[in-house]
Amino acid sequence: MIDLAQNDATPTDRGSETTLQDAARLYLGAQDSGVYASNATHILERWIGWAEDRGVTNIDEVSKRLLTNYATRLRRRTESNAIAASTAQNYFDVVAGLLTYAARRDWLQSNPARTEAAENELPAVDNGGRATQQFWSPATREELVRWADWRAEDALDHDWMDGEAAVRDRALVAIFAYSGVRGSEVVRDPRDDRRDGLNWDNVDFDGAKLEVYGKGMETQHAPFPERARRFVRAHKRRQNPPDESWPVFRTRHLPTLYGGLPDDVEGVTPANVLDLYREHEITPPTLSTSGARSIIEGLCEESGIREDGEKLRPHGARRGLGDTLYRRNPELAQQALRHQSIDVTNESYRHVQTGEVSEGIDDVLE
Image (tube, rainbow, N blue to C red; front, top):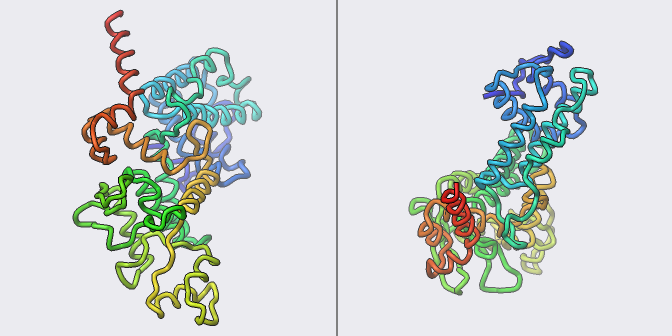
């Protein structure tokens, strides 16, 4: 695995014979945005590994044919639903950015990515026949989880933001990404007093399930796979709730926290507000649905992660997970999404069936 971020690597400018890895390190080091550089690093590491597998190790060996083949690879990954069209475009644009930099430094005569042949191979950025509904692709899902994970660990290590908040945000992303829950099942919906979000006594780590108030206004058990559990465990340790009645995702909105305390409580400050909740044995308010959306949007803003050019929305995680499961096992998708019948699941993922029929026609006519 290529590691462009290794600390002992000193990039060397050898002109046109500069290695791909050194060229990428010099390019990333020239970026003003640390967020862009962090996101681009992973993309360039994968691309360089792919190029080196094809015998290309120096920047002057990068050809128009190589970039056209890379565009073709991205298109095929989109067609197999491994990544979204917008993600493919983003990957290609990052590589093209490196090659523009190479041309400016006279390592290349021109940018081999900006050719008609390569551009024509890239998938068109559209909604994939899914109307206006957002689906998180598998690649987008993993990118957001990785970003939230890096952010949490870096916040704890370097104290550049509240570590508890970053760990909470990572747990929220993981539950959306892997449990197939609706937002109003895990955080507070201001429009419905019955939907006040998950408390810790709704979380069963041993049984791998979440007790939620489902769409049918009844208690249901949502799946809670280990990919989500490990981040939620870390969040619980960091939050250290005094009892199981505390919300899994409490609000950090100070006016809301202040308003949740009795009127006779005095001397409330940002530093002691949670201590007062503990002292008076009061459960703090839960994060709202709009607050959860803001967290996801904020992570997208920081990382540049998009789905079909748009910031991610929580319900897109549920649809995307269902799409992934449905392609493997429709009955598993039905169970994970807690649909009352397989007919509901089939209707929700009709685009998958249509695509498979189209592929079958192509196979027969070949």
